[in-house]
Structure formats: structure tokens, C-alpha cells
Image 1: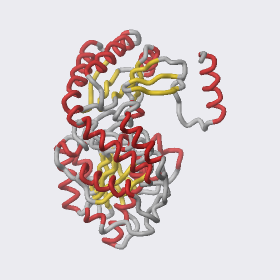
Image 2 (image 1 turned 180 degrees about the vertical axis):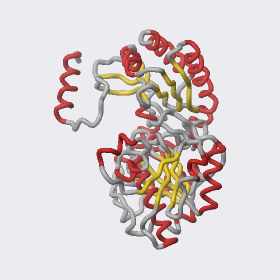
Image 3 (image 1 turned 45 degrees about the horizontal axis):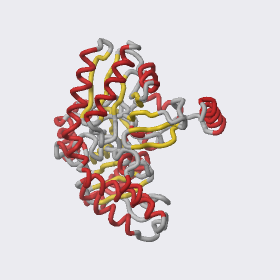
Image 4 (image 1 turned 60 degrees about the horizontal axis):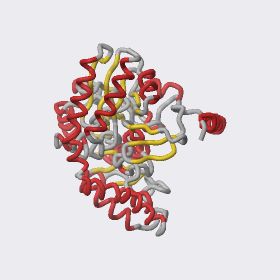
Length: 401
């Protein structure tokens, strides 16, 4: 396919699709392991993995075969019936997460919506009031649906859309006193990402998370952890809170949960499960259908077969070391942040030209804000992939700093 043909496809897309994304000028066609190929056959090393989605990389045969087998059985039944893949996925995810009840959604934003509704209903059952407050974090990102947007700590995302459905106050990550200052009689929940993704790859400290847990327990407030991006092994433990053993009341997950199939979930303790949402309070047509849950089961199978969480724990320090080395080499790089295979380099300038240059040389990266390059590769990443990435990145930085 010619470059002109690819450009024609891009122009057609711009005529037909609602312009809510500023897309890279590439039409992707297929993937293989750690690599993507565009419609012209150009090969790219992918350190974006669909924004932390393709934990298994591309073309995992066992995963693909499991989905093909489910297609030949049944795709959808509705939640008026039970289905075997959902029953199995629920039990396995409860065990993997260390939680007690689960609700399957179609996306991470929907998982956040459900988590917020659960917290609101729990508070309503306690005090009979329908007016409650949530505390979220500055620079957080929880999604772009209305409820999720209301707890997203970037005013720019919210300013055009008027009154939000939740009364939300914003505290500062890793500043427990800023949270305490906002707590009042109407506070029903605190929501936090154990590692902020879109907000700049900033990990929450153990002291902060432990302090939140103690505060919420003392005040009868629910603690919600958003593990949509940082969960499913990305930080070197199955979920980021597992590193510290600080259990939330409600947790959200998505992205790598389906490894490409649109699926999310929110999980909760038995106590919250018994005193929040009941029949009629919440639902979704496609959430938890046989195909989506077959994907979850296939993902969990591969996590076990490939021992992916251990692989991240053992391999990610090499990514950290490599990025630290790049930081020392270039004055325009001011900081490395993150943990595991969820890392960022902070620059003293816009990273757009660096990302474009890297892509021209066969490396796909993504930003997190104007001045941060985010590294969220597949969890199958090996040291040789990190070396290949670093070589291309060094050239892109040198040409733009």
C-alpha cells in the first residue's frame, strides 16, 4: 500500500469520525509480540501497548484461540441469565484481587461510575441522605463519562460541561493533611490512583495510602482505589496496593483485564457488597457477557502460564536503570518517575517532537501531559526490547533537545 493510500484512509477517517482524538498519522494493521505494523508494513516497537492494555503483547496464540472458541459457542446472553465464563472469571478475579464481590463493566470509566454509585448508595443506607461528597486527588484521571469526569483532577477536562453529578473536593496526592482538611459529615468516599497515570506517573507513597486507610476507617468513609492503569501486574504486583497490603473498600480495574477486549470491573469487600447496590440500582447490557469473560479467563491463564507478575518484578528494574541513565545523559530530562512497567521521563519542554521523531524511527511512545513521556509496554517486555527502545529514544532526544 502506498503512502498516498494511507493518507487517503486518514483523510476519510477525519471526514467520518467525530474529532475527539488527535491521532498519530499512522494506520495500524497488525501486531506480533512487542511490535506493531502499519498498513504499509512498517514495523514499530510498541512501548504504549494500547495505553497499558496489551499486557500479553500481540498475537498470543492461547489467548486468541480461547476467544475463537467462545465465538463458536455464544457471544452474549444478557444478565437475566448466568453464564459459565462469567462465573469462572468472577471467582478468579476475586482471588487475584483479594476482594469479595465483583461487577463486570465494559470499560474503566464505567467501573469508576459503578464504584461511585456503590459509595453513594452505601452512604444513603447509613444516613438516609442523598447528598454526599467525594474527595479525589489533583492531577488524577478516572475517565470522561460524567461521574468519572467529576472526580478527575484536571479542571480543563471539566470546564465545558457544567455542573458535575458528584460534589467533589480535590486534595493533593501524598499530602494526608490536605485530605483531612476536606473531610466533613457529608464525605462518603476518597478515590485515589495508587499510581497516577495520565496525571504524570506519580506513585502514592505507602505512608499516604496507609494514612488514608486509617482515616477512612476512623471516619466511616469508603476508600476507593482506581487500578485501571496501574493494576494487573504493571507495578510488579498483581495490583499496586498489594505491595503494601492496604486493602480498599472498592477497587476498579480494566485495560489489561481484557487485553484488547473492552471489559472492566469494580470489586468490593463483602461488607460493601451487602450494604450498597441491589437489584435495579445498576446494570449494563454487555457487561460480563460470555465473550468478555472468556477474555478475562484467557488473560488470567496467560498470567499464570507466563508468570507475568514475577517477570515484571524481575525485569522492570532494568527499565528503571535505563531511564535513569538517559536522565543523566540529557539536561532536558529533569526527572524519572514511576514504578514497574509504568514509568515516565519528565522534560523541561514539550515532548511532542521527541515522540514524533521516535515514531519516525520505529518506536511508539505516548505522553502524559505536555512534558512527560510515558512508558507502559506489554508485560512480556524483555531487556533487549528496553535496549532497542533506549537506542531510538536517545537519538530522538538528541535531535530535539
